[in-house]
Image 1 (cartoon, helix red, strand yellow):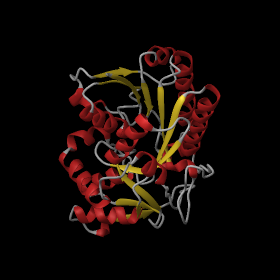
Image 2 (image 1 turned 90 degrees about the horizontal axis):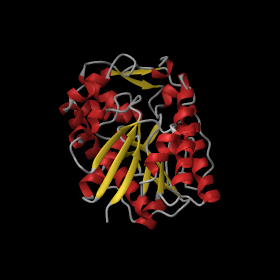
Image 3 (image 1 turned 90 degrees about the vertical axis):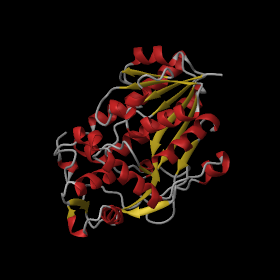
Image 4 (image 1 turned 120 degrees about the horizontal axis):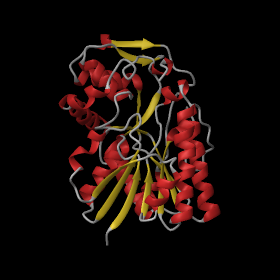
Length: 335
């Protein structure tokens, strides 16, 4: 039976990779992709599906209640990727994060409650809602301690989702994932920025000492987990998603330079951003044991594939970069 899937924010990094995955695995799925084409969205991410009869694009914002009312009526499932996501920009310009990540989530939930309360809903969140952790790993029951305007806005959206699941009985679930990497990631992020700056012969800016630790996951592995949660996750449940591949930012920079045959003299330590979390780590036992998900890609091989993708696709990233995007201290930029 054909499934009608509404994806919001599907022209961003993770959303477009998710749509690619579903279209490659499900011949009967029909996807409507709602995206406002704001910062980080790119029509080129899914340009090769423009003529696919299973895929339809609609430009619009998740804060537009009238538009959402029309779109959710025909959806069997809704996956919300729409969000402002860059921590550095949230420091200098937090108001847009409140609009998208809180008001947008509320508006989407209201549309589902009023017009299609049986629709399945997945909220794509982040490990950053927990704050940082020096030892051990966060579970789904851990206290939320967001450190930035970005993570605070995502935490607020999550709380709305849980409240609507309990109060109104919506078929809603939440995924919280660690740092993603892979093709089509906007150049402002650590890995693509490092690849691009290194290729262009520019210095590689590293905050502070570079010892901040992130738990990395290849984007396709994340999307496979989302698919499992979408189809089989329990209503009102949170699922942490992690590959357990912890690396320091300095290690990332050094490894990319090694893959490119560049020297470590390109690394430049710069002023740390305010409130920079020291370490993220998630316990993903629940999604592994309950839904049988496992990551398929090792970090080293995934990063090699990612570097190769950016080297082979300069026509994709070059129209997106400017001095602000490649800034050494983007949290100081007035976006």
